[in-house]
Length: 362
Ligand code: NAP
Image (cartoon, rainbow, N blue to C red):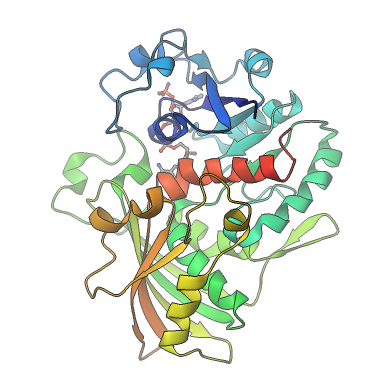
């Protein structure tokens, strides 16, 4: 199969670096184009990330000497890329939205990690194991903008990756969850690089991450919602309450989760069985980045732990454990996902693989 030529926007950042590491030797995608802010533009990638390369592997040889471009240089990207991964950060979200739309207008599918387009009415917010059917909205999106080849697909926030697939698996098995209480313990890499100052993080827990609780509570309602007349209708059957904290862990967002069922409550054995046997579209389609088991239940009483479990199935599986009765809700458990892999670059790659396999990226 001829490989697709891909660009990474925000290639120098935390998520961009993960894309470069994870796409090295990818079977379908060849990284040919890198872009970041004007501060990095015009020099080789190795110069641009000098002193701030955070991966535990070397920069791939074929990437080192690629000249980094300015994200604003859309025409240049359109000549080189079949599609782009978007992972750049600008505080003005309207500007991010505008730039992503310009890429789509120039004929490039945009597979985004940014939050700017997550609530755009005709943009699907994808976790391929949960809502790959939301890709149906792309026909309306392209028609609304008069785009022939380009379009935008986003992935949700990294904070909800750990618990939403386990909830979805229970819903799919006929056990509707109606209330969820979550406390997240989120890794520092989630704040990008250099991220939270070390004096705020060492020997400390910060009980606030700006905007994160709103995303954790609201984004699942779109993901678990439906499409009607070319628009998303939010799920109104589920209520979520979240507290999001930052902890001194490098990678891996942990969450403690309490759930209440709408009516039927499965036994604990049934819950574990549902999780361990859950498979979905990415597994059926054998997408290269799909974990074999999207949910792994660990029986060990002191797991999952970020250090030991975040890399399960190349960082793409969600690990859950400590399922027990709850005196207020029905059950409580602990869930973990790798924020910069499943929650960012790996999740984006899985989205792109789904788009290729479903014929949206040609
Ligand atoms: P980061 O480490 O701060 O990297 C930011 C990237 O954006 C860098 O490549 C930077 O380029 C570029 N950039 C900054 N200002 C720019 C501008 N004015 N124009 C164009 N590019 C600009 O952030 P990150 O953690 O990689 O996050 C990137 C995106 O992914 C964000 O939208 C974030 O919300 C999202 N995300 C992150 C995570 C995570 O776990 N970290 C998870 C899910 C989603 P320079 O190096 O040239 O400044």
